[in-house]
Every structure is written in C-alpha cells, then in structure tokens.
Image (cartoon, rainbow, N blue to C red; front, side, top):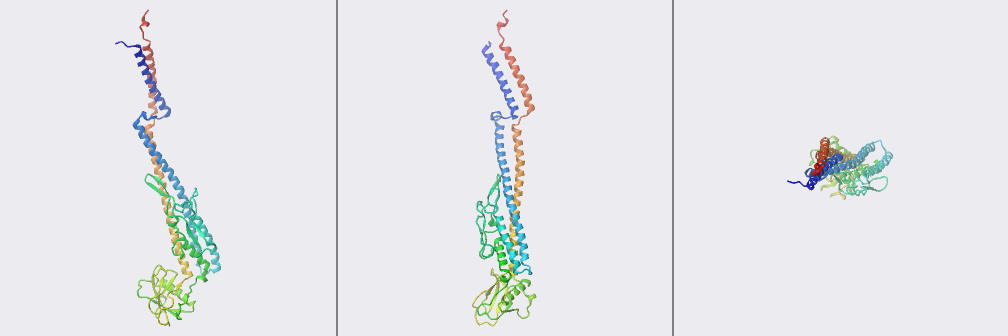
Length: 427
C-alpha cells in the first residue's frame, strides 16, 4: 500500500497535537492543583462537587445565623440579669418598708428610691439590640414596649402601658430548626398595669408597693366602720362548714378586724370559750383585703376573701334591729398584710423573669451546639470536595514528565518520517 505524504503529515500532526493537549491539561491541573477544572474533565465528579458546594454554602449561612442569634440573645440575657437584680433590690426595699420601727418619713425616703427603680425597670425593658430593635416588643421591634404615664411618686394613679405584641422573631439555624431571638414582654412582665392592681404582674406589684409607701402606715392601717344601723358591738364566730383550717392566720385576721372596727369605736369580741389558739386559719389565698358579706341571717356576715372564697369566719352584729343591714359589705386593709402581699408579688415576678432568663440561656446553649455541629459538618464537606477535585501532585508530576517525553518522541518521530524521500537515496 502506498502512503501519501499528505497522510503522513496529518497523522504526525494529530499525534503531536494529542500529546500537546495532554501536556497542556497536566500543566493546567498542576497550576490550579485541581483535578477537575471544567465539567468535561469528570462529569460525574463535577456534579457531585457542585452539589456538595451548595450544601456547604447553606451550612456556612447557618453558621453565620447562629452567630447573629447568639449576639441577639446576649442582649436579652444581659437585660434579664438586670431585671433579676432589680427584683432582688425590690425585695430588700419591701423588707425595709415592713420594719415596724420605720415611720412614714422613712417610707417617703424609700418611696423616692422605689421611683428610681421603677424608671430603671422600664428603661431596662425598653432595651434595644445592636441594630436599634427593641428586645421585648414582640415583632414590633421599632416600638418601645413600655411607657409610664404619671409622675412621681408612682402609685395607684400611675399607668404602665404595653405597646408591643405577643409575637417572637426567629432565625433559621438549621435545615429544620428556627430559634427565637426575642421574648415578648407581655409573656414575662405582663401587658402593663391594671385598674384593680390584681393581675399579679410585675407592674401591678410595684405600683401597689408604691401606693403603700405613699399612704404610709397611717394611711393603710386597718380602718372600718359598721354599716348603717350596725349597732355597737361585733362578735367573731367560726362557721362549721369550713373544715381543715388552722389557727395562726385567722388569729392575725381577728386582730386586723379588731383594729379595723376598734378605730370606729366598735368592740369586736370572740364568742365564749374561744381564744386566739382555737381560731381557724383562713384558707389560701389569704389576702390583706376582707369582704364582709351579708349571709341571709339577721346581723350575721361571712368574711370572704376579695376573690369570694369563704374564710370560715363570721361576724355577728349585736343589738341590731330586725332585718339586714343597710350596707352589705365593708373592705378592710392592713399595712402589714399589704406588705406581705407585695412581697409575694415580687417573688412571683422574680420567678417569671428567672424562668425567661433560663429559657434564653437554654437557647444560647442550643445555638452553641448548633454552631459546633455546623463547623464539624463544614469540615466533612471540605474533605468531600477535596477528595473529588483535588490533584494528586506526585502522580500529575510523573504524568507531566511522561507526556513531555512522549511529545518529544512524537516530534522526533514526525521529523524522521517527514524527511523520508527517494531523493535522499539518489546519488
């Protein structure tokens, strides 16, 4: 078979080009240190690399989100720690205010201190994060959650308003996990003050304490007068229908009743054969306020809590005309018992703030664990990508030398073959 010169040149050039392409690809891999520089290098591995990089990118965003969440929760943590400190200081003030040696002038001094704590508390609850968003407004982060309406000294005529809502802002920290970065003030501190100051939230308790300090012992000492046509004496009795009650609290109640009616010039006495040690205790919840309600019998009144719960004690008005009294109830207050109720309220408010603080701490721990998991996953993704696309440098270097040698051999072979001609052998 006769081989034409054209075929010889085409075959030689094609071989040289193949070797040059191989050498070029190896040089490109060594320059980038990547085995895959384009999808055509390894289509299957290239697709797996792209998918893994997308997963790694999502994971990297979740890691950044955990950092943002922890930063936001740090602000809430600090604010709630301060609220806890204020509650502790409030307890100390209530204890001092309950000291029998303190006069009304001393209570006025405590009142000024209380007003400062009241403003400090509202200021803390109106704390913002690093971006100016309010922490305790729910999702209304551009609105201050609480406002005070009224002037010093704060008390019964002061109004605290909640301007936020009950929502929470959350940030996604994983494929199927979102973590709340705010806590609505309404859930922990209440929606402001109430008219009767009986909701049990932190503001009702504080304003009740403020009013107590304003009124002083003289203003809150038990005072009562008999209802119209009420006679001149009252006997305290025990209802048979209320079992399982003890004596200590009822004894205190009896003393309050004696003080209350005694200031109105009316005597209060126990029935024959009964003394302080035989008095039953008022069932929980025992309140500083009593309601003396007509019980359908001439001159007899049941003592109930302001919630309507029967205490087991009765009042009987002596020397009365036939029929019910013209008025059907009377409310009594005691400075000592009011201070005890304020302390209970402060304790309850403190517990609620500590519960929220614990919840924030739990979320911060979860965020830390989520971030650690994300960083571990990031290493797994990086290794997977490296295994797929990174170059074996030793192997590539050897291949490069071999490709270079093959190219030189192809060039030399082509040079020899292309120079073959009968003219070279004609003498």
